[in-house]
Image 1 (cartoon, rainbow, N blue to C red):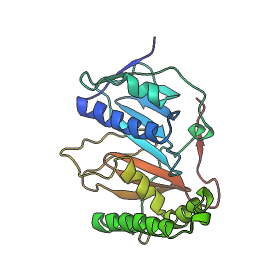
Image 2: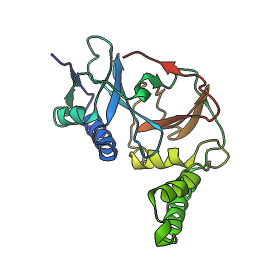
Image 3: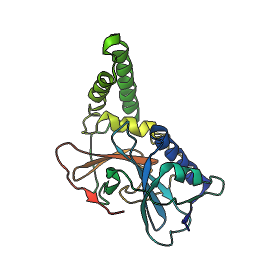
Image 4: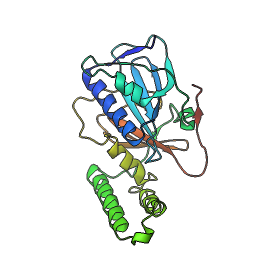
Length: 238
């Protein structure tokens, strides 16, 4: 019998459902890696449009009976979420895509300087979206191909944010996945595998561990590897 998860409150269930819904929006066959131990569940997904790893932490009201670590269908997990009861049923395991075996390191995260404030981050996103639309609209009809539009997108979203190494696509992913929102009060800390602690004093922070970068917010994180090597990968068997 599949394990039933009991979340700390209906808000946790609703946030998980919203996150899963966004993943399924980008990929109807989306898979998620689930890891739970103690009082938190870590949900890892990879929306194809952004080329980042998305991490959502959910607080549990009751610890899982045995440590949980598997890859499952995001859609099936979403269908099992009961927001009113603040529960979900863990679906059966599936054979996941290659990324599910390569997750960020559990520890060793250090904060990096240079991340702009919220207003400048919003301005950077707005400017990037406007530039893409302008350049896309200016393409002659015979050049308005998927490959040309992808080229423009890669050029824009690979630019770095402020004085950091973080590509704009990571910030775009965080916005699109609902991670860049006004902080509700209080936001309790809920550490999860690969996610690190959540801090209300520092709502958004840029962290690094080995060859990984992570943009952390109280509602989730996006992580990606720096160019130039595999770095500190953790290959975890399912």
